[in-house]
Length: 284
Image 1 (cartoon, rainbow, N blue to C red):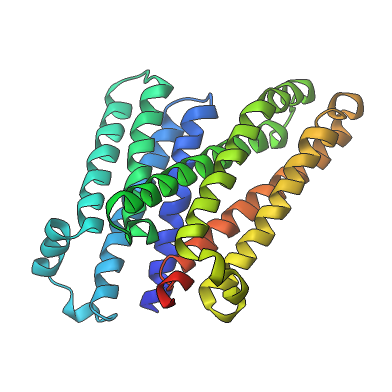
Image 2: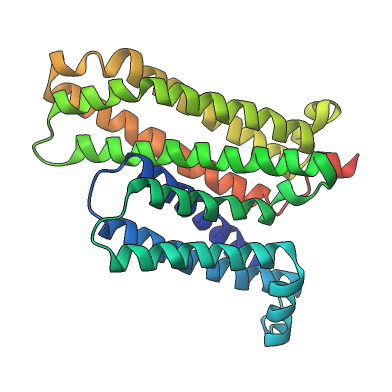
């Protein structure tokens, strides 16, 4: 039960924090949605930290104490990362509440910093020295790129699902994202390869089906492939035909973007689960 709760909390943090970064990059609405997402990120982070502490007691909630939480906050990398995350999110929330207009670049900077701290909660912190920093850096870039993709999907889905959607405006927005989207996908692929080299290794590829971590990664790759196919259909087929087909094209694009976002959320869930499993490289 405690393990399932920890996986859920990790999944929420891995969705909300990178998603906040993506929304800051692409959303054009008011500040209140960002206030809500930032507050939710703080709550998810706090719950996740407590559940991590519970997991370190072997799932014994009765063993949780103030002394244990203080020790984790002061003497462990996840604890220090949590403190930094709360400071960044708290500063962002306060800024959004006291100022009527906050530059999106400022929101994105705070969100990127808070997202980066998640790297110390996963396998990216398992190595030391130069290799460790390369692994952490790849993890951070990977999460930010995923967040940018999720944020863009949410924005584009919002464009096509609301009543009276302007299909021409949606087509222009999607077409304009094509170049940025290619960069995001390239970043995800490159950092994913670095992480795979660090956690799986060449010798571990053939043994992936033998471990839970490996099976989760296989499922993740299958979903990522589905996302790439949907994104390609959006870019090369649905978006160019949107103006000509009008409402009918909007419906097809709506379905495609919904499936793509659902696949992204499922991938985050698999990553959250894999984060508490032993990677193949550890068994070698």
